[in-house]
Image (cartoon, rainbow, N blue to C red; front, side, top):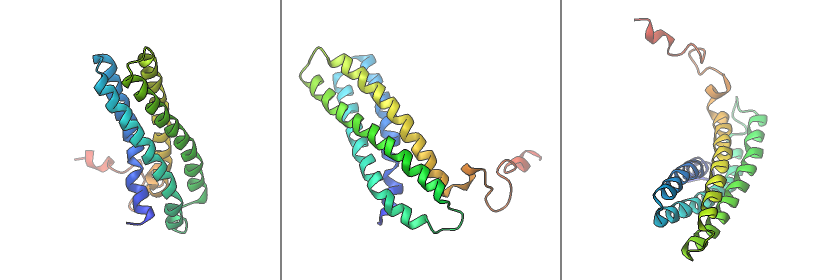
Length: 164
């Protein structure tokens, strides 16, 4: 498995980990389940590690696609620049999650406040990493750029199916 393949596989972990973790944390707060909340914090830490790996393998993925016809440097650059913001937010999420995990484990009076703070950070992180994923998808999924795949216009595809 090369860096490009690893990049494409691992990029989904921070995206889904941050939003699924937020749902789990929200459920844990609603049910007042400390164990469920702690599971969410661990998922956030895993998502942060996945974001680091995705960012690290991004350069290798760029090398693999930058000379392919139809791939513009500007799309790659936009994805790369936004990925840094997503990485920073996920690192913050991972650190906040570890701190909240310790606070929760010690049964501190700050646990509830820390949990809501972590939830907020996870939602912001999800927004950033989802946008990064969208920008990354534009690199090879030309339909996201409004460019039709071979065979027709993006808006026209599927229109003929309803004309039975």
